[in-house]
Length: 143
Image (tube, rainbow, N blue to C red; front, side, top):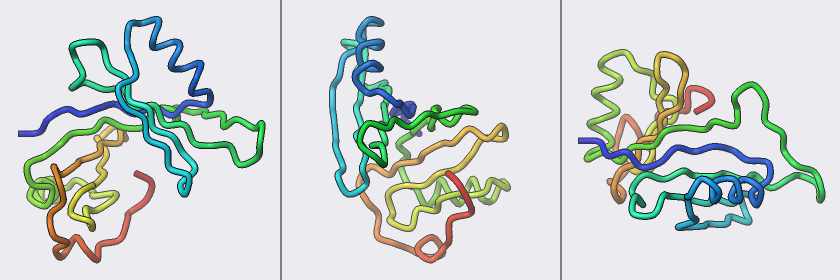
């Protein structure tokens, strides 16, 4: 049974976005910075409902003082679900004709899209050992 985890949106100003969601009553529950990937993830939730998160993804600007501006819906990232077995889930989707845009090569994460192009992240609770055909399957495009 899948479990809803979070919805991700890209933001150009993390502080202003956190302030906005704070006004709505959400609070920051977790933050992760990745200097190598040049991004910050900030997870927000309504008090008492920490299992339904909004993930704010701030991609650090390429030059000091420049902010990323997202257009054409690229600020909405994806919905995320934890699944019991990522390989079985991906196989079931693939058997039904769904393209696996980012296969679970690491035994942990995959991306697929809805018929309308909404990106869905599938996350294994923990990691399964890499297995074929997933380990060598290439990405099929933007996830």
